[in-house]
Image (cartoon, rainbow, N blue to C red):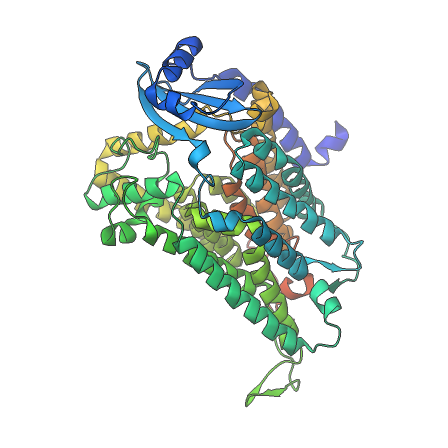
Length: 567
């Protein structure tokens, strides 16, 4: 006990874990089946649509679970492959149906799933992130990151449970690495050389920069062609576009969405507001309407994230007096090409990570959230701006709520007041819009719709796939414990927040923990974490270190300097 008292962060984590595990287990309950299991299977099998979908297929397993208190899901499997799925109303009538056998891919463009393309992208990812000698922890990080390609391939072939389980090794490894890097620190990395430099020993840095520029442009064009030509956007894109169309008509989406997307109104208000300009040009009222503008926004956001990663990893110290080089009539630092190459490698790594192209071609709004997260870290030295971006992210999707305490914990004095004011301002603006469109009942309607994310039933989760659903509250409590421990540690040692790589790693660890604890997981969520890996585990340490001038003012005890810059 004495040892724990000397480590308040660990003690806080243990206390929160115990309280959370007991409390969440006590209040946990699965939604009851609106229709008894046997009756639901009977109604599904006697549906004309299901009979047609299963007419030339053999099924050996059926899974029945409650979507909510009014809808029930019945899914048919053959040796682990999902064949068909229906949603039944409480009266046994069909609400939605999917015949997976006729879908070439779960969502997105089939080209993005093409095995040779996935292999090509994986090879390019290794080229720009790997190092020599090969016995370096960095290469292990790269290898485990690439295991997240497996869920993409398995889901393409309709192995739902296997897709979820295949993500577990990579997510657990990256969680452990990011948490350790953030909270325990690590020894200085052993000397290494980028793999691209090893393979091109005769090239000067400028030539490598030109090659990386060509690769970057080629990847951007590939993303543009594949994404905008996608014919099977994910239902999330239709939901946010339909909600944005409702907002244009002066109606909140909550409780007023068409029934073609089940629970399409489960997102915070900003998820729909972001897409209002697109819906104004091209309204979406059903899944028969075009969402091409939404796909265009997705690919534009992917490029923006690439720019942020380039900027963060190409940051360099100020030029020392007298060190100049002539190039095209301008003075340049001798190492400018090396710094630019580091930034280009980070941008190319993001675009070449195979799941990113698949995710972008689906049009999911998760890419927009990824951009918000990297901007929050890019602005880390400006607490008010960074906190405002995280608050906006929380109004877009709920996950960034867990990062706000981490952002606020190391702040003091005016910095803390400014950050809290920024969060309050964002919340006030969004709340005013919510009340202005729907009155006070609009707040209740939004909270009721969002509650579905916490009570939904789904076989597509790690807990369901492993058959240990009753243990899910333990995972949720562990996530709360991680956040609590990190907050106490940063409150005690605010100087830790000055290392941008630590903060990027900590943010990645929290987001991975949220995904592991959730009652639904899809590989689309990987896109939240990949850019943060580019700012932490896969960053160039010498390029993204804090480079304040020697005469910079030291932080006062009551007002510590904001965390280190990424740019």
